[in-house]
Image (tube, rainbow, N blue to C red; front, side, top):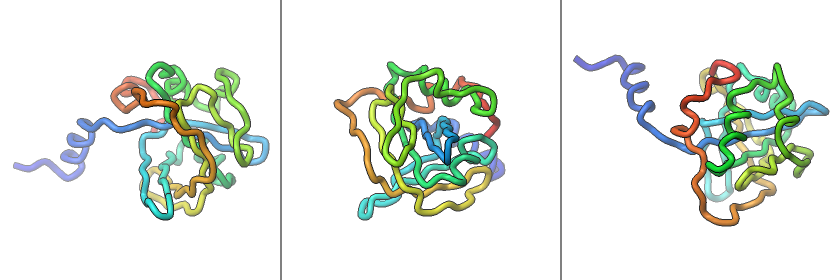
Length: 165
């Protein structure tokens, strides 16, 4: 007998491994960042990228008033950065006090330990269940210097989230 749709879906996605990103943003004087697994390029021309932010975390709340997001890929050698932004909540600590960063384009925090990053202007927001999709128009960035092993879901599967998804 077939499993329910939700059970089948959960079984399937539990097998997948996909890139993880650290997303940072700023609204006024408030900055925030979190680990994100729901993300994808959605268009080639014009270039567009989609980030899904959980409605439960501080980064989502800050992003509601933000105009831009920074999307970072993290090399496995800097996995502690991914663990910091995934395993802690900005409601309790200032993650930026625990890592090196600088002010990037449009005033968005950019993580010095990222292997590559881009800043995107938020063009649209829409609900996608317990997350909100943010469509980005890339405006600036730093490409990777060379190919490396990037942090994926398999690398952070054991991280207890700072907030429930």
